[in-house]
Image (tube, rainbow, N blue to C red; front, top):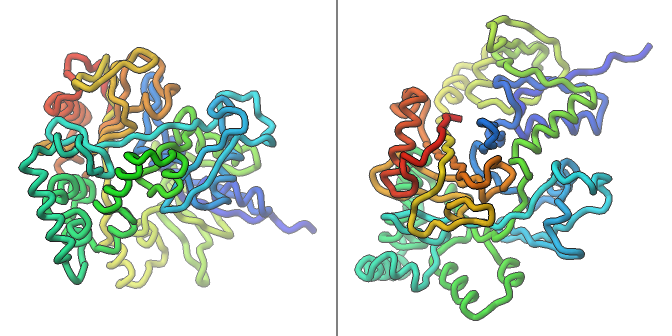
Length: 451
């Protein structure tokens, strides 16, 4: 008698959940059933279609120090052949490691020009007082002139003080950044944006966290990088020593990161797996030390259902995971899980006729825009944290190449004042702040949507 096929419940159809589902199908006889509370796949790596304009939830560059991860992506979406000349290879850096990639000859899909990864140039800058600064900071004449002589002198003095008398012990992110950039540059370029993103004072964030997020960066490295460029160091040699934030080219799906996860989801279903959308997992029945049942609620109808399972893979928030155990987890575990902080964000998609900053230029398609993939907004007096320009991620995201497609990211906590704004109020705030900081006129906005 044939043994019944075992079932794995996977909670969440984001990158981790979908990867787990596809790998179970490839490597075992376990049947995955993916439960997703929203009506789409990809999690925060999804791409939203707004009247034909594909807009990302957060910016996602594709590069990894893992050979397995790189090969896995290429199996799903191979590198576009037109992206590179015959025999050319590109370097992608990640945490001081470098790898070369080139078009694969064994994909079996060489004629498919739609389901591909593109090679994209990278540019991200800091926007402060109506001017753009390189990110990471570079010590050059442009930076000096934009800062102004007085602020530059103060920056130099505070950096020298940090070098001669660094903060010890280095306990907080504030200590970490001041030791590497000095107090003046820390307050000018790092403090406001970091606290806007995380909702926590830099003095309350650990230095270890900073070492992971901003690994290897310092003003000294910025100076050395600038000297290397001035000395004419070959681009490929410079890139081999690049830090994550200095990556100059990266891989990106033609229709956004959501395209990759939509393709993975299709392969899961084709392989015999299942994806159940609009299903919130609210109960995990525990029996004899293992999860034996998964209880779900249909988001639309509210109907409850239960499924017996052999395995569970969870990508849901830990606080929700622990709260769903039946019988309940020990009280101290529930207390710690419930107290875990989570940061949310709201993205407002904007379609406009043009950008109006004095440095905006028309690209090859005719759109009047800035060249950045994303811009860190350091301007005082606005809630906007980061601005994406989707035209520069991939032209295929924008159906009308003469228009500009933007994503405005606001960071918040569930239940705070930003979270409670209606969609109409959120769109009005976004359009007003774009005009306030001098990047887009309200009269040039064609459409807006909270995505």
